Length: 303
Image (cartoon, rainbow, N blue to C red; front, side, top):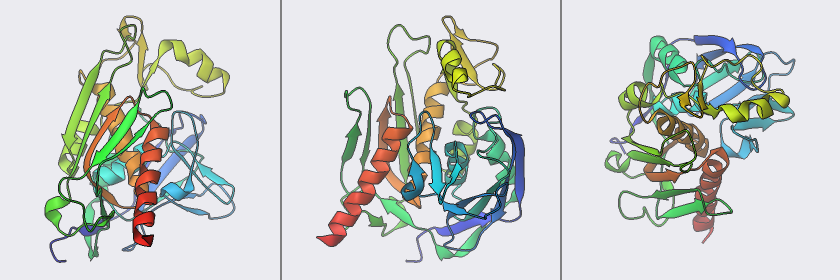
């Protein structure tokens, strides 16, 4: 169908350097152009074997507070901000080379990656993009029911299955995130909702930074995490609010959680469309939704 969007890649390489928030390693990420239908792949150039890890849910491994990918003994940690930058800018094909075990944390957002990718330039390719639509309402919940992620289509199901959409008219993605940690939390209840476009992502979402409670820091550092991270590198919330930093938006925390959703949803292996509503969800629940959508797709094709 000629009205479907074309695949996109970058024009030339782009690099971002820094240190990893979890592994503390100094690292450089290099984004490289890729051929049509190549998808997004991660490569650890610091290791002797060049293992290419596709950025799809099949290679995701369970981690706390992040999304990691694994293949043949090689792991890349904290992939969601890079994936959000690529998905948010509608870059379908790219090789992501890393000189360490995780991308640089930068300021805890996707802004540095977006700036580098935009500076590299984005070009359309001669193939249509894989755009996956949600055919019917789907919801996943946490075990205690306090968190959930729901997906529903814009219109009627497409032949009763998840699959490549029929027209660009239905290739929209609206995501809403509702954050509420309760009355005792220093983080106020808030929400964020956007209809995604590359422009909206770059200006309204990419700069939203990750956040943590001051009371959580000691526990994480006892596990070896965040040894180099300071209050200037992300948002640290004490009892009276943000410590040593300033919010970029009143709902920056909700915007960042929405950013995480975009990165995690990209593991479906293409552009995803529909209406998505997340409430208090994290990476594990986001990944569960992707697995559920793909499992439903397989089941319907077999029916």
